[in-house]
Image (cartoon, rainbow, N blue to C red):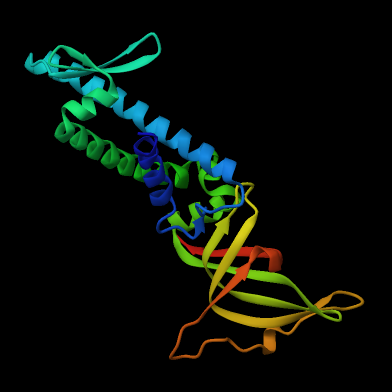
Length: 240
């Protein structure tokens, strides 16, 4: 029963990051953050679904004078379903009417997907919601949504050889964030590897003479763990 309650939240969380560069993996280090977020998502989806259904029932009754056979009530903190004027607990309703329970659960899952698309659109337009869902990279995603352009990154790694540090540049295919918005890993498409030399006056790089890892007839990706990353510079070039 608890697992069924969590499924809409899991669907919401998974769908929210589909098609987005920024990801929040299920297996994040901060298990508490992931668990609490899924519980909040599931509770919000179920509550909004009940409210939506109550509004639809009320509007239908007013317009067509038709009384739905199903309703929901809260009695001293306990949730009950009313079906054909008989009150059932959630467990009893599932066992008594498995087909109707399955249909209701399917409707909740569809509602979770609808809410996902709504939240995605709001996150691209309202900074507070965007940062809540996608972390500090939300402004870049918002600009990418509003116009076409190129999203690039430069990654400074912790791999050193004397005063030289290895860097990578390319197009971020996936930026996975942990609970505290720290980087879990980055996947870069068509990466370029070069060195950053810490000079006496200013850092010098070999970017101008570097060669891409991929060729004109191939495409390549590189996976960089957060433990290997010192810093990342993201940059977007947009054409409205």
